[in-house]
Image (cartoon, rainbow, N blue to C red; front, side, top):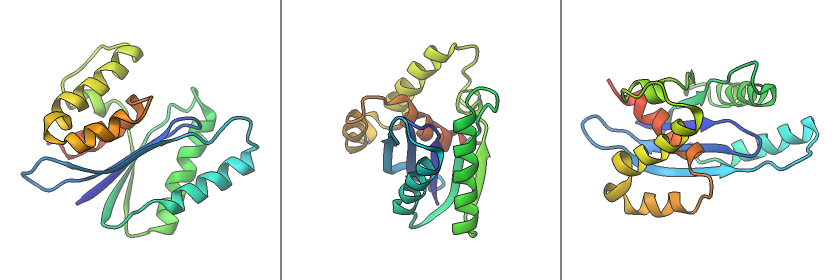
Length: 165
């Protein structure tokens, strides 16, 4: 099974795609953190987002996780998440598309009570230590190319927590 996860943002629109087979470690198949730029009109943002989503390789993907947005905090990210959700259910009706609560990323791994900066640091460290690290040196090199790693690591953790019992 291949799972793709998205962390929504105008400047840090991140995703990761992993192969997840029962009884085997996950294998990282792709990742990116895209910046849609500053000062875009809403219509232009959605045109760019649509082009970007259409460019993604979805071969073999069965499940798409979209990080659930806190509605009051960032209305633009909330609208983008709805757009992404609608794109997948209309363009790929065979996919299972899930709005995934962000608290699962820490709760499933027994982590509680961290501040936002602590959660960001923990996210990167957990992925480096337990998911990629020595198990996937290519994935580690790939991750190192991104200046802001926590958004991609959040996507990886969404996938790992989703497949955890």
